[in-house]
Length: 170
Image 1 (cartoon, rainbow, N blue to C red):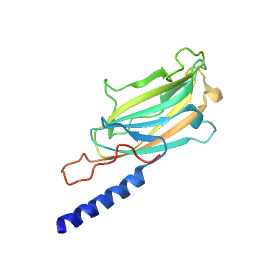
Image 2: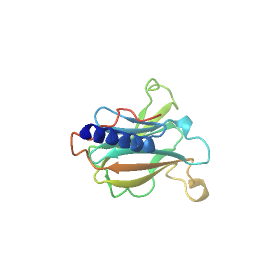
Image 3: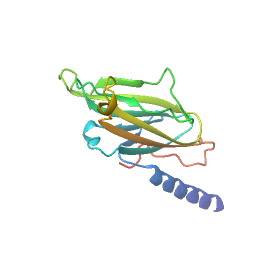
Image 4: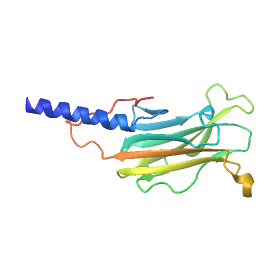
C-alpha cells in the first residue's frame, strides 16, 4: 500500500513538472529528441518569439526555425551555447532545407535546424536571430528573434520514475 502511494505521489509530481515545462511548438520524438519548431508565420513582428522545453541529460535538442528562401536572411545562433548543452559533429548546425512540398518553389518556405545534446542538468537560454550577414550598422538589426529556454533534468535513474509522454502540451 505504501509503495502504491509513493508511486501516485511521484506520478503527480512528474505531471506538475511536465506542465511547467510544456509550451507551444514543443514535441518529443520516439528517439529522445526534443523538437522546438517555429514556422515562419509564428515569428512575425518586432517582439521576440519565446519557446521553452524540458529534456533529460543525454537527449538531443533540435530547434527548427522557418523563413523564406531567396531573401538573403539566414538564422544564426546569437551568443554562446549554454554550458549544459553541446553541439557535436553529428548534430545539424544551421542546416537549411525546403519545407516539404516546396522543394521546387522559388522563394518558398525553408526550415533551418540547429541541433545539440544536453550534457548536464540545469537551465540554458539560446537566442536565434534572422539577419542578412553582410549588413552593418542599423541595417544589421535582426528581422526576427526567437528566444529558447531549456530545462535539462537528470537522466532517469530507476524504473520507479515516471516516463514523460511522447508529446508535451501544444
